[in-house]
Image (cartoon, rainbow, N blue to C red; front, side):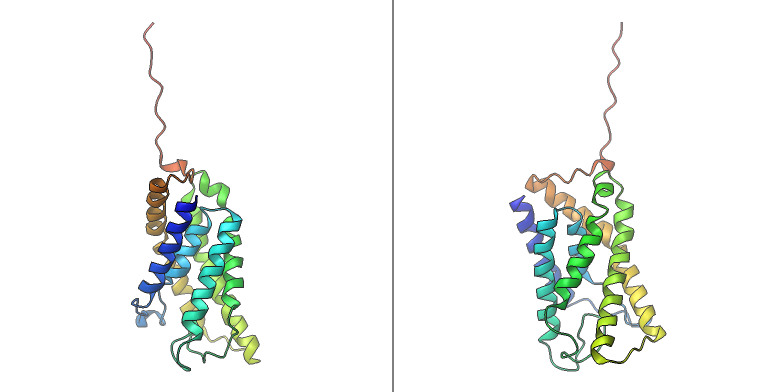
Length: 199
């Protein structure tokens, strides 16, 4: 368990670095792949609540540190262009915990091998995260605006990130196998047929 958790932390740090080099898709309303959030969501369904909350704290802290400490007026908040002072440092920790518990809710289905549900819920969780973040931004600014291009940006970002979740799950399955951590993903294991005995 400890080896698997440390491997997830390394994977999160790598995702944070790679996130810096992933460009926005200008043809799709500046949507982008949220790799750090994707790795966290895929990891959330493979661990228990205490480890998930620890990962939520790490991811939320790193996300806020990356976005809030940048230059004012830059490409901040992960998706939207707003000044760094728009939201308080630490809000992402709460939002990561919220979407982490959302993923935890389908853990029994995931352990039974129904990974398609988990893949779909990754997209739903990212949509919930981005909508919540945008509503918080509007609340802090005291002015509610929700233009249609922003909604398209959120939808395309959620869908685009969701498409990569099977790949992240596959990597985590191999990491768990090497670390001796049992995810109990029985859907991909072929059951051996009992041998017939001749009487």
